[in-house]
Image (cartoon, rainbow, N blue to C red; front, top):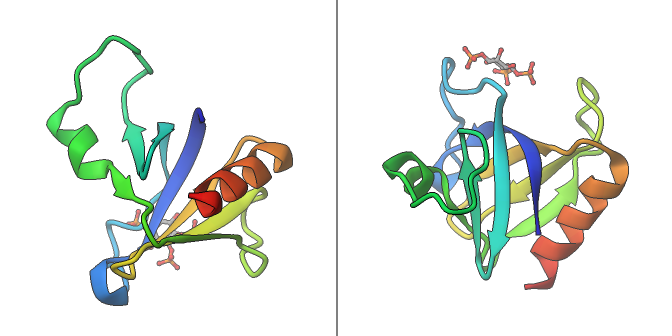
Length: 109
Ligand code: I3P
């Protein structure tokens, strides 16, 4: 599965609140491959090799949980991703259908 997602980092490993200045929304082209969610900052290019940033931004979804961010009302179609090391991301999908599709695909693996 792949598509555009806008990401906000809410908590760093061990659930520590991500500090000010690092909490902004950023747009990515996301690709779910196996147990890894790759987030590419630049325009999507299938042939491209992974950059250092791609590796840094990749998220392991092994033992993670995705759920609709019912308590977040500033933007529509937002879901939480809580990872096994207790990081928390918010991701905004382009529409409700895409949001549900990402949640389902992340939780099924
Ligand atoms: C953050 C940025 C986010 C905002 C966040 C700010 O600033 O403005 O958009 O979240 O508020 O800290 P920075 O880019 O300097 O990190 P919202 O869009 O959800 O308001 P927060 O600290 O209350 O999460």
